[in-house]
View: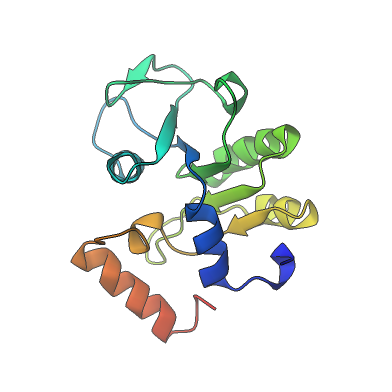
Amino acid sequence: MAVATMTHPEKVKDFLAQRRIAVSGLSRTKDSGAGAIYLKLREQGYQVFPLHPSAEALHGDTCYPNLSAIPDGVDAVFIMNSPDVSEQVVDEALQLGIKRVWMHNNTFMPSSVSQAAVDRCKAAGVNVIDVGCPMMFLEQADIFHSCMRWVLRTTGRLN
């Protein structure tokens, strides 16, 4: 199915079907949302790769300064940075031929979404998700993320 005609649930299913996922936006100094998502993906059997420009390791795993540094590459990238950093990560993902990108958008607070990056992904035929958080769709989602998924579905944002 062409990415342009995929529904949000189909895009999420396609993204989460990938086993090698880079996670951008982890913090060296505090617990972060990206860190929680990284750990949840790892707990559920995904092979995850933390991206950080200057950390050697995060959560006990080798950290990579960029997508190009990850041995054997990845199938998808989850981004939880400021929109300007999201654009940089997306540009590298496009150069590497990565076909699945998720920019975190929790709806009620600032998000990682850059419309310019979304547009570049769409033009390249990339499955780009710019609504929601993977925690809303993983097995055994917590009550907060389950409620957020319900709110976004009810308001028509997850079509």
